[in-house]
Structures are given as structure tokens and as C-alpha cells.
Image (cartoon, rainbow, N blue to C red; front, top):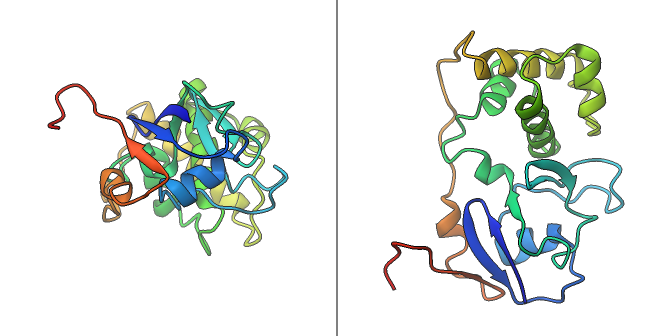
Length: 185
């Protein structure tokens, strides 16, 4: 049994400790925004934040994630209002969308450290592969997200929110949401 905090909620995965975090998130927690791309850590589609660092969840076991804080694309913001999510839409830096969650996670980690990155810093920090080739718009989007994060600019409209993470975990047999202080039993 591996315990960690996923999107601000303590959980326990009743799975083999060597299970990749990717599969625990997708199959047990029903957090399917984290994508399976290559399975060897090359593409970045499975990127999540682990204690604030962007890591490829296909390469991290749930045993290695024990006690850590995991943020998936679903947890980046409950209403898709994170500056990176807003800027990706505003700059039309999304094509098919498959790689977008991993890119958004990597960009969020970068902007947490440096809200005014250069084009070179962005290209270095975003190792994700995108078959659609959104790279030029991606750089603009991340720079714009940095301006939003610094409060030098605003973006007016958020995409409609998706499923609540609590609802997603409600009926999953391999994961239990552990009670938090203030929760009703």
C-alpha cells in the first residue's frame, strides 16, 4: 500500500509498489489527463509534478512516490484557470491535445521557478514531443503565461471546468481517498 497526496488529497493505492505512478493515476485514480506516450520517458506525455518538480510518471513507481505530493493536470487548477492552461488556449498552442497535459505540467514547473524565462530556457525546460509541431506557439504561450503569473497581463476567458477530482475517485476499487480534517465520515 502506497500513500501519497494527489491533487491535494491524501490517497492510498492498494497496488503492487512497483506499479508506475502513471498507471496508478490513470487506472486506479481515473485521472486520465496524464497520458501514456512512449513508456520509456522520452516523450513527456506522462509528466506530473512530484513535490513541485516535473517528472515523467512512467518512470516513477508508486513506492518511490510514497509520502510525496503529486499534481496532475487535473490538479493544476480546478477550473482550468492556471496561467499556463489559459495561455495555451489563448495562443492556440494546442492541436490534437494529446501531449498538452505533459507540456502544461512542465511549463508550470518552469514558471514556478522563473516567471520570465527566455526562449532558450523554455526550450530546455519543455522536453516534451509534439507530433503536431506547436513549438513556436508554445514558446509564445509560456512567455504569456509568465506575464500572467507576474500579473503583467490577464487572459479573459477560461475553458469550462471538467470533472472534479473527488468525483473521479469515488468509485475506483484500487484507490481510497483518505479522510481529511473536516471531512464528514
